[in-house]
Image (cartoon, rainbow, N blue to C red; front, side, top):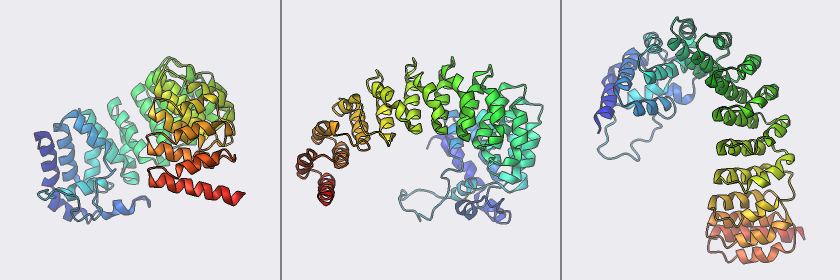
Length: 418
């Protein structure tokens, strides 16, 4: 085991038994928000928090960020009783790991996390903020105080904690934080308002889409997408032509999340963006909105120079439920050399009962990929045309059992309809 990993495990395990006994006395259910999995394990006490943050500070920055990412995601035991473990695996640290899955309720631990918002180590500040935010109502006073700190670094971390808390009690403080002198604090506060999906913040976030700082514009676009309110469409639309690629990507994604038809024309207008990432996101957003007006442009995007854009366009076309005629580019894509594009095209045609696609789908029955052949059978089964029957009969001889089964069912359905 590498020294940096070993140090983290030892640090966590060092407080294991004694802390576990004390922690059982501190467990509470906060505002009804503690899940069954969280309540199964008491949160960490101050000694365990100190050990964890100290281990993070000492470890490799990349590992530190990875561990911070996963806080609360899967660090808990589900009664596997050792199944799937190596025979010599030690589990002495299990109680420490499980405690970090649950919200912190110990007062001393909460104070330690509040101090962690001012740590010199960026990753430690991030981990402290996440753990503090996961404490929900117990941490409100500490987060409010930190948002008033004279240190911009602390205020930014406090806004991060508020975003993880996702409680309406901090809305007013976060809106005020979007007027902070530090653009880093403003951006984080905007992000936090989005995490909480607060419609009350739409007006202020819309103003921030015109900010000079690129991080603020990115955060505002992301947050408005998280809130998913059609009132944000007008404010987001100008950002589709922002000088920053990230802003344009996040804006297109946000408009797709909002799913309002008012965004279709602005999105269509930037389908030729110089950035492939933007074009891909625009295609996906148009598919999310499901407007038939997007079909011609998505058809043209199937011949984009970037493979990710082509695949996104095919998937988007499949989302247009009322589309009954496939663009010719989609039918041609069934024979593409790109396996992922072929798969996306055939799956899209499963939702578009176009007789013009029969021969192309029949050809797809010879594809080396089983998933594509299966999708071709499904697509053929959705087309009410007698020319489909010979292709489905041919699929009855497919090497794959599932393809044969689906072909037989499709033929049975056709017989029932006659």
